[in-house]
Image 1: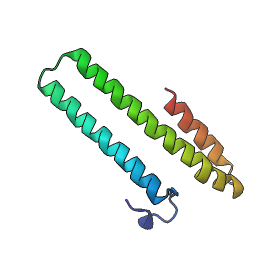
Image 2 (image 1 turned 60 degrees about the horizontal axis):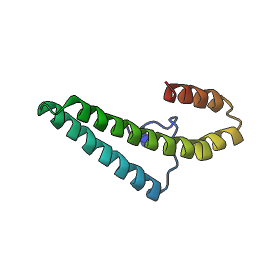
Image 3 (image 1 turned 90 degrees about the horizontal axis):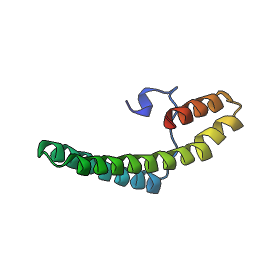
Image 4 (image 1 turned 30 degrees about the vertical axis):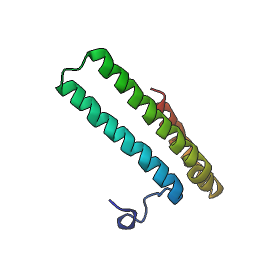
Length: 100
């Protein structure tokens, strides 16, 4: 769903450079996932697959940290400035989920 079809939906404020960086990281992760799938199909030794999964998890954590920082510095600050303090609860719930 694009943001134009949902006028009440919140939208992010990422620069083109940030979007390109995130997209590149996610494309690499996508490639890693495809590689892991091939490893499973080719009966690669489990420890090697687990190491690749750990690498993907680390890469995803990196993307999460970048997005979280951007979210706090833009979206959260903006909403607080607009008096929308419920964003704090939303942020805390997101952080709790990330820490599981």
